Length: 318
Image (cartoon, rainbow, N blue to C red; front, side, top):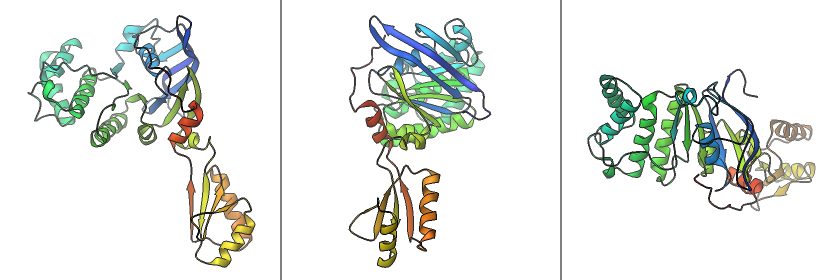
């Protein structure tokens, strides 16, 4: 399923309950090294709980897990040496400057102060924070704070990073800057486990997406694979000649005329096989359209279809 890349994270049968409330119900997934895996789901679906268990902040009730080759339940120190975590809420100390926050992380990682200074300078430049390096973090914008938060996560050179809704509250420009940072991390071989409620974010970034609903994984695949799971897709054929349009309309009885012009919409899942069948049928009747395009539902459609469109109660922060 994941090609030749080994799994950075493996989860099998993970479950977690709070009293009688089942938060995670025997979920399974793998995340290949150097990839972005996105976990989608409404509030209360279990996304943050999953991150907390995999990052050793909480114990699961059962199941097998491996993070960087180690078991979070029995080898927490080894897991922590491999990972970085950026949670929903910033870990930045607003009373310190950006540089001081980074130096503090160096101390917590037991780095020599000279190495911490060198690393802080490098990260401030990488995250475009040089001009604000010696200003207290309380004066930072939301986007600057988030960039500093991720920079602090990188002080320990983690190979696996958990990003729990990292762009919540950011404006569109800051969000796209964050996307570029995430892509750069993966280009350097880092594995990203991303939870988000921004479906466009998952669509833009993730190599694979899993949808979590009421504690269960209800779907997993690439964005394109998920989009083909719900109805509403079609292949659009555009014509300039009425005779060609009429011939195609007869050949595709299930097609609908759209926009009141010489355009047909043929219901389809958008797969290569379906496109090939359309082209073969057109070829058999000697008709060539002036334009062909594939339209599939977006992740919003997938999300609503798989979760019923209902947001559960906000997930417990325990």
